[in-house]
Image (cartoon, rainbow, N blue to C red):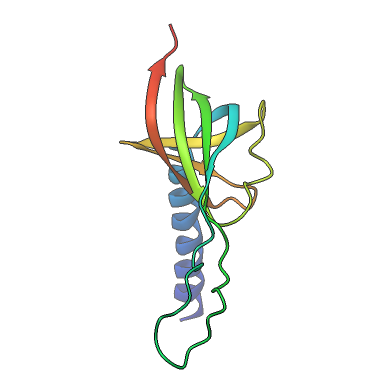
Length: 128
């Protein structure tokens, strides 16, 4: 019984390793060419709540920030928009290399923690 359990655990570890390796193969190295903030939306919740008995103090909310990133990967330059309520990922600075994968009109880029962030591709241009 112990041998079957050990074999099952070893098989599971090998299977997970292969799945993770396959997932990483979809990524390619890209380079952040430029980055800038395109808009800073007005703070949400500036209007008082019209319901009786409620305070007229504005609601506090983080402003939404939209950034435009130009990322080159695989001979193509992608212009992308990233919308966030927090500051931009510190590793995403001009000239830095990043891991990216493209699927349809979305560019997935890994942040410093290894998590995927989703950026909308506005346009792309092949470098010739």
